Image (cartoon, rainbow, N blue to C red; front, side, top):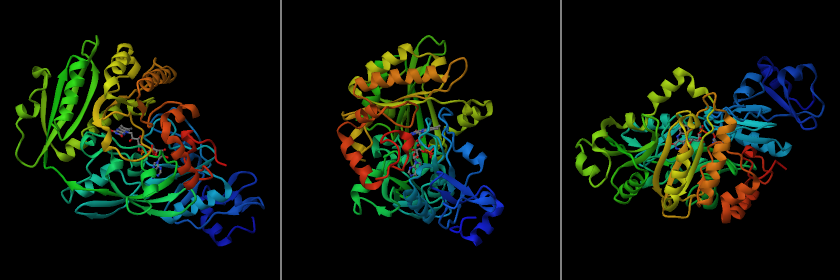
Amino acid sequence: MSPSLDRRRFLTTVMAGAAVVAFDPLGGRWVTAAEAAENAPRTAVAIPHLDGELTTDPAVLAAFADDYGHIVHRTPLAVLRPGSVADVVALVRYANRHKIAISVRGQGHSTYGQSQVGAGVVIDSSTLNRVHEIRPDRVTADAGVTWYELATATLARGLTPPVFTDYLDLSVGGTLNAGGIGGTTQWYGMQVDTVLELEVVTGTGALVTCSPSRHRSLFESVLGSLGQLAVVVRATIRLVPAPESVRGYQLYYSGLGTYLADQRRALAAHRFSSLQGQAQRTAADDGWEFFIDAAVYHRGTRPHDAAATAGLRFDPARTVVTEYTFMQWIDRLRPAVEFLKSIGAWYLPHPWLDVFLPASRTRDVVAATLAELTLADTGQGPVLLYPFRTRRVRPRFVELPREPVAFLFSLLRTTVPPTTVAAQLAGNREVYQRSRDAGGKRYPIGSLQLSHRDWLDHYGRDFPAFAAAKATWDPCRLLSPGQGIFGPPR
Ligand SMILES: Cc1cc2nc3c(=O)[nH]c(=O)nc-3n(C[C@H](O)[C@H](O)[C@H](O)COP(=O)(O)OP(=O)(O)OC[C@H]3O[C@@H](n4cnc5c(N)ncnc54)[C@H](O)[C@@H]3O)c2cc1C
């Protein structure tokens, strides 16, 4: 055993076998308790004290070499299950000394290896999962808390975060590193726009509390930064009074032009509390139809349906109006998810593509894409299509089309044989290029290989500022190299 290993700590962890006790910088590998008992290299350097655990258990490594996409697989050298924020600080500092790459995984629901790291350590944020404090206007929670857990805790006090993603079993840290778009983005921006304060561990291992009034530049840079600048360990998020009930409207359209025009009309008129929509194949599978998926939130007094939908040109014969509790509404995807799990489709590959399109070009891009798209191409996955105001989204590095209104256009593909992942990825590339040519931007949660050139194009005139932020907060480029934006650690 190396003299640099603490013998007492070794003895307490030896039973764990796969638990890591040291790193060998020369061999570039971890030394487990079991190996240390045998013969650890003399160059091994003991890891700092941890409240949690650093493990090399092969089953754990395999689980963290996968995500909801099931397309990219990078096996980490170890996984940290932090027992405290201090563990994250200690690991990041240790990683800086030994040039070890780091990624964070919340719920692993990004689809193309975004949360993975080969030859590095994944921090499993799910062990940082406490809701700390709920006040009338804000909630403070660990980054590993899911939006479902957050909603459950705040709704018990009659309060709610203003914006939810469609699926609630995503971590706070995961969506704050992407953006977090939902039906109320038209009012509040994305989830990143509802954050009042963040506690982060920068790429150099500094624990910093940042907000619009403290370390403002870091605050504005970290939100939506794809894990490039810091590990988010805690967030304080705005709360608003929760509605008691929700009246949901599904309004059907046969024509894309009328659908898009009505979506924009509904947005401009602030008609609905929540505004989303989708394209779907017709029942006869001979074309596409569209529906606005909107809601009016209320407290007791039901809204007048005729007033809520006045002036919109949907097909009245097919309108679906449903009364929900607020929790039923925000969690309305759950029954479908349970069904997909029961038939196994949830576990198939998901080569998703998500882009933001400038409103002026949305019709061209969507029409050209849908003209080529079949049910087999999407594996019957949904096609989201809804507008929001771009000025509501403030973080510096969430890239959007440069128009007042943009549409989210998402092809939520599932790979159902005989369709192949390769064919769907090729389709993603085509749609991405068509979107980009029209001034669109990628929402980087999906499955698309971007070259350095593509990333330069993605960030455009923001790239120098993003690169400068990277050089300041993560100069060794240790954080989230899997995104491929800045090159390997140095
Ligand atoms: C069924 C489903 C529905 C979805 N619906 C929506 C939707 O309506 N709107 C929407 O915007 N998105 C939606 N998404 C996408 C989702 O928001 C992103 O994929 C999000 O990143 C997933 O969160 P996660 O906890 O699984 O993150 P992970 O996949 O674990 O991580 C995503 C990225 O964030 C980084 N990261 C994670 N946690 C931290 C942290 N604490 N600090 C620093 N970096 C971190 C990771 O390294 C990685 O780069 C949906 C995804 C699924 C599977």
